Image 1 (tube, helix red, strand yellow):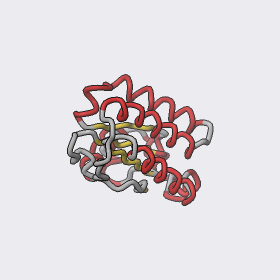
Image 2 (cartoon, helix red, strand yellow; image 1 turned 180 degrees about the horizontal axis):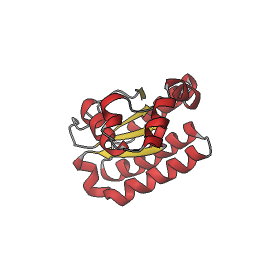
Image 3 (cartoon, one colour; image 1 turned 90 degrees about the vertical axis):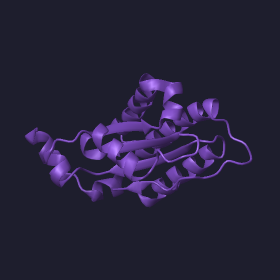
Length: 165
């Protein structure tokens, strides 16, 4: 457990999320998800969390482990074609994690998801939070369109609104 990490997590609060993602940005991200899901049979969720607190922080839970917990809590795995995708941002660690269900993961693999995370993190380092998320959604969309093309019966199985924890 790093004291530096604990300090960052104790300082970063929800106000930082509101600064990086004002309501207008959250609405634009929701629209990007809606537009994306109209073109394929997959499901995308975006979650941003300011910082860890309590037990997860003092257990030194990684952003990846937290993203997996959120993936389960939001039931992103519970889609008809096993093609749910969670894009998770932990602001205090400046870390993006993509957690995906087995249906889409077998087509893309770890390296493909990591490339999207790195591209998004580049945007975030430059202060372009909304653009980074929308670029990430576009990259995820290209994989979902290729492997789970849509049709007129696409059901919206998960909410499109971003989640702020």
